[in-house]
Amino acid sequence: MTTKRIQTRDQIQRAIARISHEILERNSGIENVVMVGMHSRGIPIAQRLGASISQIERSSIPVGILDIGLYRDDLSENSTPKMRPTDIPVDINQQTVILVDDVLYTGRSIRAAMDALSDLGRPNQIQLAVLIDRGHRELPIRADYVGKNVPTSRQEDVRVRLEETDGLDEVIITESRPSRNTKYV
View 1 (cartoon, one colour):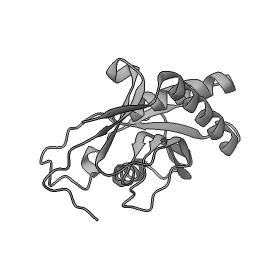
View 2 (tube, rainbow, N blue to C red; view 1 turned 180 degrees about the vertical axis):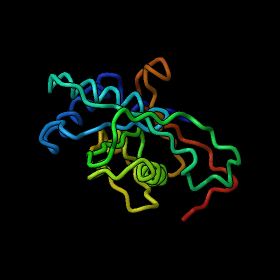
View 3 (cartoon, helix red, strand yellow; view 1 turned 90 degrees about the vertical axis):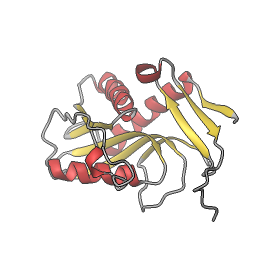
């Protein structure tokens, strides 16, 4: 199994700074904007984006966390979903919600997150920010803000490691061995 580092700590920090500026430009500031990080690595990325935006704007932006466990479409494969807290500090009605995740792959987690958000309220719009977009979409979902586009094969795993969860900041690609259930198209 081979492993390759595709982003370092400095590159992740630059991506966060760039995405922060893009969010501010697209939304003309932070009025009526809330960041919502998806468990688990979307949370520290959302917190970093929130801190970066707050530093630029000299005003805080609400940052929340979202659990999608009950909204996943693979519940039959995992009979007991891991329940984690959802905590969004403001009402999301009439807000621009920026949904944050580490890696965008098939789009299924994002669809689950949008379903979870719709149970919490009716935002004006939902935007998506991801650190890595690796392609291979199964649903028509596209990120509004991307730290890095990384073309991959389906036999590769993209792992985001963050200081808050893993003790270091890096993004790696690992070539995995095909399983017996791997479909070749």
